[in-house]
Amino acid sequence: MRNAGAGMVVAALVGAWASKAIPSVSSAPPSNDAQPRPPYHLFAGQSFEPSAAAYDPASGHLLVLSDHDTTLYRYRLSAAGLALPRGERHEPLRLPEGDAAKFEGLTRLPSGDFLATTAFDRPDPAYRRVLRFSYRPGAAVEARQVAVDDAALSAAIQAATGLPWFKIEGVAVDPAGETVFFGVRCVGERYQEPRDVVLVVRCRLDGDRIAAPDAVVRLSSAEALSGRAEGLSDLQLDDSGDSFLLLTSHEGPDTALDGHSGHLFRIPAGALLGAPPSGPVRLGGPLRQFRAKPEGLAIVPSGPVIVVFDDDREWKHLFAGYEQSDGLFAVVDARS
Figure 1 (cartoon, rainbow, N blue to C red):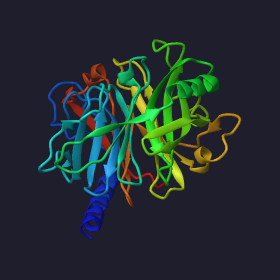
Figure 2: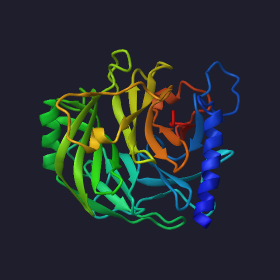
Figure 3: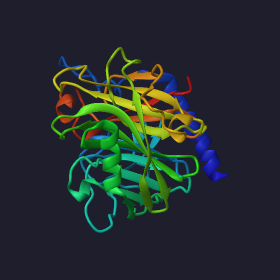
Figure 4: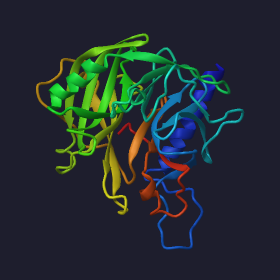
């Protein structure tokens, strides 16, 4: 009953935030200079470009990963915003043998464990790892390696796109925790020439082993966004299990206030769980539009969702009070 009560409190808090925070404004103090304030609420990290998020219903904590370190950041949502819970510390994951770099996706399994993926965008093995871990408040977090058929994953994406290079930015699982979905944000001949895509690669998940892909689903944001092709930045199964929520991001000039943006979409679960269509699936109209670069999506059971933004260092300089150790977050109602 304690966890159920805590969940009701958190859901009420999230609902209250969502009702007042679309769009939200920064909690930064007013500035005397000409720079605008950040478009969403600030929260504090360390070497911080928050790239992935997941909610732990047992503790009511939001877990966040950054693509600049291996720290597992822990937060609790209160009326004051996202803050470090009492008795917690932001500590690095204890990694299995070998390093891990550039975390981009995080999701919660039905068992209560969490699955984290790196970007797979460089040949260095540190960038091509999937880890599994359990979380307990106040305790060190030991991660273990999840085996991935890297060659088959790469071959499936190249077969679908005709291009050899790719970058993963999201990970999700089905309601049973038996299937994993990798969200691919961009592809190219090489990393210096990225092309935004919305691509989902489906693989069988068996404990600590991910099998070769059995489907690649191509989606398109262009029809819903007046021709703009944005890249997938996260996806998560909705609390109902009937649909997936999907984030896309646009990364333009770091010197322009509108250089970062993105959208939130909903797609039927069957689009990813069923037989893959022969052509791209058009995304419907977006549920929300964002004025920063959304990259992490955490779903609170029976409540709205928390979005974290991975804004680049130079873009942060355009706003008063947006420090390099800060991130942005928004709480949105995705039910409509």
